[in-house]
Length: 455
Image (cartoon, rainbow, N blue to C red; front, side, top):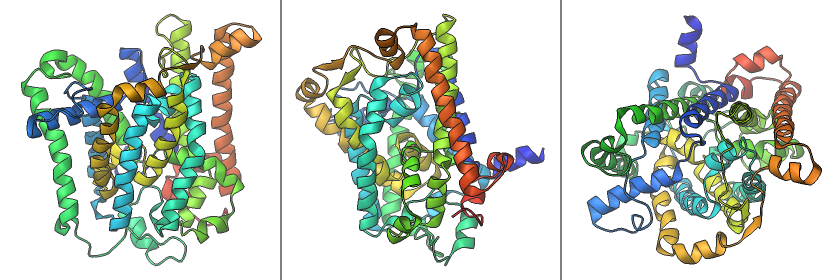
């Protein structure tokens, strides 16, 4: 009982959040034979609001107005985590400059999802477990631009905001710490007295309540009258798991992708850029990458098992051709957007549920980011999806045709490589943080990145 109480009331290590994300992916895949997809559902929810509130069809001309219950329940799951910990994050204060960066990040990320054929959730949490060539290209093409966004944030003096999930008690303890100062911790700050925060919160409520109303009372796409209560449960379960798991950890694909490079970056580099020591320790200990790899391995093993035994297929993360120019061009937009928002798309949903102002500021950016695509879809599609760059969808397919042996054999090799990377992340954390394996498993991120030792 004490363990359950601790899990309910306290933050978790990244790997446990990654396990929850992986389980959410498995539930979704088991029912839909596809990994979790979110950005089209987000566009449909925006379309409901714009059509019914403003009488325009800027997004709706491409995306049918509808409700995507997975997104709703991901936000609800994150809110549940805040309730469990009695620590909503609307107390975290961001200045106008950081909120502006988050808005720009939402725009870049949203447009990037249209160019890259999906968000980082699609490619990193779904495509990489599915052995997608395109998803790896999205990841690798984005990493340099993630650091470009990192330099922009730190160059503007906002490096102190780049951290994992804040908690009130730790922020109080670390107040005034020389190298862990948190500019978001401002004693006496009242978010309900901040007009901008209130306005953005009302925008979030409108974004959720308008599709909810029509989803419950009409026949828009995804409504109860169309899908029924049983289908709703299949979307609610992974949404709750994912939202709760991410909110308990601060799990995000952007931190995971940037962590390995910290092994080649000095501690002084982070300090000179105003980034707190806790972030350096988090990156250098490969903690976010642990969460990502747990999620990837969990789903990958289930997909490979289902495929080999004829109970499922390998999801296609890239379209009819294995790679397009859009994947190469979209990866940088996703990477920059995620860093500026301080969270990828699903982490932003969790941060919305927790009340983070940067997530609230990113939401209108998300909407505007769809417009260049929906208003000029044919022209954009011709450029980014007009020509396939390879005939292969997965690495297993390519390796079988190039080197021989069956696709199943290469799928096992791929799974083995993913497991090896996962084990390496824990070994790297043990060496840097100077902890036993059990301590890495049971301590949450705060306990790991603020602990003495490991420099």
